[in-house]
Image 1 (tube, rainbow, N blue to C red):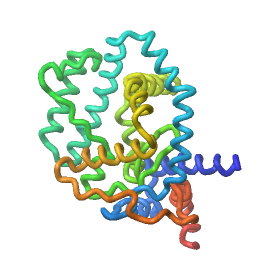
Image 2: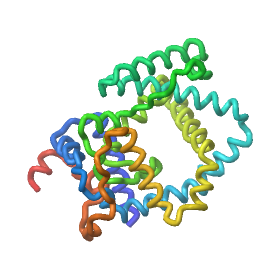
Image 3: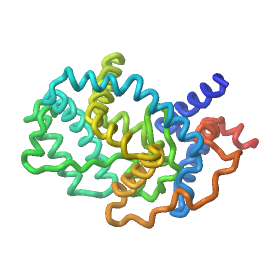
Image 4: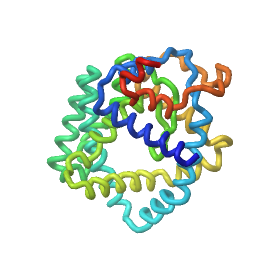
Length: 278
């Protein structure tokens, strides 16, 4: 049983790597299938997703939340805000690229001005000078870019450690994680890991109050998080032009032999010859 679970996690990680660096026909087919029709069922892997969600919740309760709580008590708020500004500055740079890819000239230009202003006059983003001049964030990631290009969200999926996502956002995840982090500017592996941990803990510290409120009001936390994630992503991709949202409960429950995210990963990383012989 343990071996099976380890294999599934390994395959999922291989899928992320394949999407980042691969280009085989099997992956192209997987990307094509991500163009979900509006009526497609949004959560066909709910059984898998709930198990991973429970794992992530346990990890958060035992490790991440206590770490973030201690971090918030020890580190002054202005320091935490400065750390947040640095990460936001990198996110603005990646956002500018995605705005260009989406053909949004004005937001792209404003993002470039934000990054330049904060990097030069804000000590590499420690201070958010641009916001003081009325230049707002225009956060765009590659998942949103794929959405603007016509890719549907596809099925909802929860990944270990990474949390809620969709087929489309999972495809974009390697690029979004790499290019929106200051870690891409660092060649030292240990320092890169430290920057990543700092980003995770600092972000979790900002959400301590929200997490507590969610625990108190949500009757089914999994459903609440899923619906909130999907609605927000639709809003970010389409804005006021969003098509009618599909109903996650409109279809019957997935059959017992339904394909899971790990099974999708297995087919995506299978050699082309093996895939053709099936």
